[in-house]
Amino acid sequence: MSELVKRYTASVFFDKRLWQADIQGSLAHAEMLAAQKIIGASDLADIQRGMAQITQEIESGAFEWKLDLEDVHLNIEARLTALVGDAGKRLHTGRSRNDQVATDVRLWLRSEMDLIIALLVDLQKSLVDVAEKNVEVILPGFTHLQVAQPVSFAHHLLAYVEMFARDAERMSDVRRRTNRLPLGSAALAGTTYPLDRERVARTLGMVDDQGHPQVCQNSLDGVSDRDFAIEFTAAASLCMMHISRMSEELILWMSQNFGFVKIADRFTTGSSIMPQKKNPDVPELARGKTGRVFGHLMGLLTLMKGQPLAYNKDNQEDKEPLFDTVDTLKDTLRIFSEMIGGQLNPASGHKEGGITVNASAMDTAVKKGYATATDLADYLVKKGLPFRDAHETVAHAVKAATSHNCDLSELPLNVLQGFHASIEKDVYDVLSLRGSLNARNTLGGTAPAQVKLQIARHRARLM
Ligand code: ARG
Image 1 (cartoon, rainbow, N blue to C red):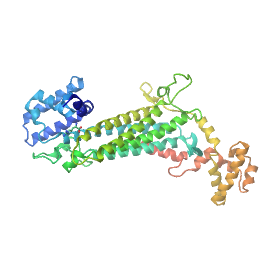
Image 2 (cartoon, rainbow, N blue to C red; image 1 turned 45 degrees about the vertical axis):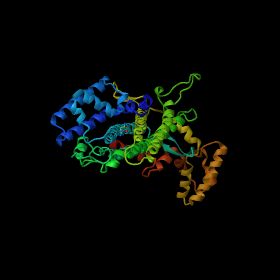
Image 3 (cartoon, rainbow, N blue to C red; image 1 turned 180 degrees about the vertical axis):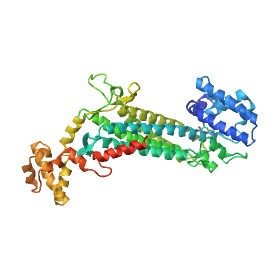
């Protein structure tokens, strides 16, 4: 091989990241080989001793990764053989790098998904914390980015909690299908050695909820399936899409024209030329990084679409998109939980420096857009008008309010009665923001009573 081809085909400088999973998988395999009397007890002891030393060397930075040895698997195996001799050479009995790498990626991704699920829980808790303090804060709810109806700010935040709860659920679901053992598929057709694959699965914690070992049941599929990686990237893409929508809202809300929220200075930057600027870099970058995660999803789908069974070297290209997806998602989730919920101050035991809410700016904005017009229509319906007629009557009232440059609630009673005789003094309860909010007291609605129920439900769930 020329130097260029060596560099082109090698993966060690990125797949060395799998080293822990690689050693974990090798130890489980060796332990089973010994139990099945395929290798001797002293071979197993040598392998265990060698792997303990390699672990130490990698952790301390002393391990020398060699391009000549192509990938993480060959690097570790070569070092093992240098350290313990023949036992190192016996480790690969009944195994191929094809089932080895498939196992490593699954083990690695499984532990990353566990971290991601925990980070999703943290982010939900941050949102619930802020929601709890803002149940009675009212902002305009939008459709088409036009003021529609008043909603509780807590209710708005809890919409995102729902999304992140589904994201966590999806991750757990992907985890189930990731947590299955390819090892024992060997190169593609299985092996002639009497392996106990279920034992290896149990050792590696690849078991279902009842503790039954989960083993890939077809060797060709076992070495070539990367569905789990694609599913993970799809779940990550959905999660980033939710983050990106939230980012978009934060960016709008932080602009002077809204002024609804502020995020702490440590998440913003100034401009090199305009001294007054405080730019929402973190949400903007998150929105931008969403694009690269979507790109990785498309990349992985395309990587797989033309591959005949079973393993092909193409698969080596699954790692960088997967690594980058995991890194991007984890960093984004961490930074968002902190940006929204704040950072724990160990001295006070409280979180500090989260999002700041400007309730009066929200109040001003919601009063600009006739947000209680639907409430007036509903009021007229309760007085016996058909909804379509009520809708039209209210349209006239809104027109009048527009020409007086005031809110519906600021029109005098006699003017309102000019639109319909059934209107009485109690109409002002309906036209108030709080009245409008309280009236939406159905399951999933924005009434504070409902929002409090949801907060309690999330609290219990996120314990
Ligand atoms: N580095 C390879 C990968 O990431 C390991 C498997 C290589 N197998 C092979 N038959 N060349 O996929």
